[in-house]
Image (cartoon, rainbow, N blue to C red; front, top):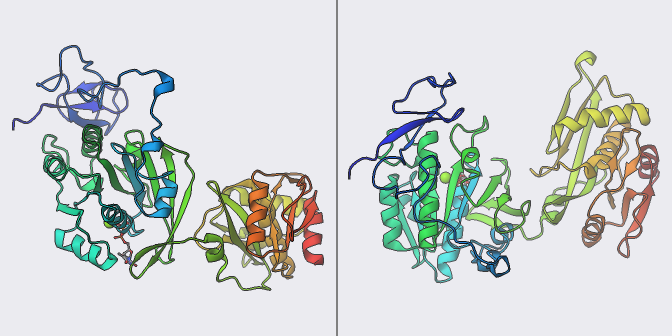
Length: 461
Ligand code: TYD
Ligand code: MG
């Protein structure tokens, strides 16, 4: 096959050059030239097509239809059979769609997708797993260990894009897993696998193939702690769906989130636990997250947080101690918005007159969950106050509310769902903003207007 002509386009100014250079000859930007197939040359471009449209794919023009007659795409979603994954995808995988599962190495992306492929294959569909990182035998061994081997499960160990597309043509899968996009390369480009040029080009070809064949394609994208060079960020606008898969390597809990979803809401959260035989879906996350909680410890408190559309009871913990060096008191926040902690500490010092400037303050949300909503303010503040004073908060109490700079407690969204979850798990008391009108039976509401009042209520109990 004759190699397509490639050019180098400047990521900064869009200028096109035939040869790669360290610096763009047009705008002078460094390391901005990225190789791509020259659409202005060769037989791929029909007459009249815009030569300048990057990523343009022939024959895939979208025909207009009456708006009222547009078929609801979510209605076409095919459940994978993994309930937590299907929940995050708002039903399942849409045929012809392309999704990206982004996460750090070792979080369990390969395992998740192998289990999803297995579940889909078990329902009589066909799934092709393309691994660029493992041999066929290795993938098979893993599938066997996960108990997902079945008739409809296919495997290829391949990194060369044209060969992968050929494999897809041969197998005609309903789902094609690409593990990972960073390992792929198309010999039509000279750039190395994992480079911006290869990653983008291969992803675009996969998008075109998915649309043509109706296969749902799910790609793995590695992210490094430092933020990857060529990976997920680059692909976000190319794919229909971006899922992030996170979790501490040393903790069992894994969180799957849709951060972009063309066929449904984003923000939905799926929870898994990495166990001996793969990922196990966590059906009752609140119970799971509170499972190891020890009652009667100062600084420990339960917050009904919202993750996606889902209430989640999490334990907030604080530890406050005299700083070794008062001039450099430490502040650490795990699972919380770190930037909000200094503000909350200032409110606590000024409005509740707790002396904290020479203290080390550690706050953490237990279980690997990240809470970034302001509704956590009151729980964080009461947790720090409890840790500072040494008294424990009653075990049967949950706390939520936003706290303003004046120390006033403000209302938050989704109050009924937070309260219902607290009641479901047997809590009896909720410290809430004064504007909350009523809660579920059996749950006593302690309505507070100010931080100081909340501290007193919690301590008095
Ligand atoms: P893996 O799916 O390979 O992660 P990724 O593709 O994101 O890099 O799995 C990550 C880790 O999970 C691996 O180091 C071992 C562990 N693991 C289990 O604990 N149990 C299992 O059943 C499997 C398959 C993996
Ligand atoms: Mg992997």
